[in-house]
Length: 218
Ligand code: C5P
Picture 1 (cartoon, rainbow, N blue to C red):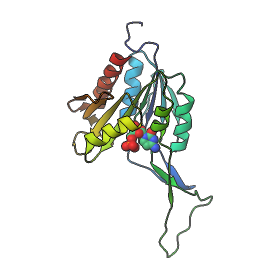
Picture 2: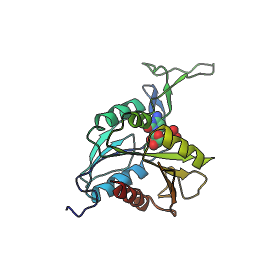
Picture 3: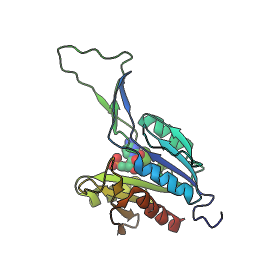
């Protein structure tokens, strides 16, 4: 087993969307399927890592893999789970699509409709990745960026601002990339600002490319 490239490494992966409650029956969410993060978790496990997966609501499964899965709903739940696992992590990969905002107040009862329009006030969620970057010690910290324009420039900005080791950029302009697709096309930008572009491929193969970059860095 010691020939496995990630043998003995503790890897924490986040995946999926977060849901932010409006009332007991409604939420604000996004179209993230969780596929990319689940593939990373499974490939890392096959490469010998001890994998902990922190997942928002997703239909994906890691059944049959020795992966410790923690299910969360909201960004604040995910924040708690990621911080609880951070000290002992060698590698943290934030592939979750975390909601940037949540309703400022959550109604105790189902909100009743009337003839008026309804305004829901939103407040900012914590930036989980940025908060991990601020207290980074030995960990290798990896983020994702999904952009529709100025993608390289924005991704480089995030890499620096969140104190990442590298960032995985996927563009929504690309027909083979994005939410709920089985394929993805990525560019990896390193903290030294060097860039590596990959062809469109299955999310499982994209996961291998990302983890191979991690193996080289460990
Ligand atoms: O700033 P932006 O949301 O584009 O950054 C994307 C990266 O930051 C992803 O890795 C995502 O998981 C992470 N993120 C986070 N907490 C947030 C928003 C994004 O950890 N509230």
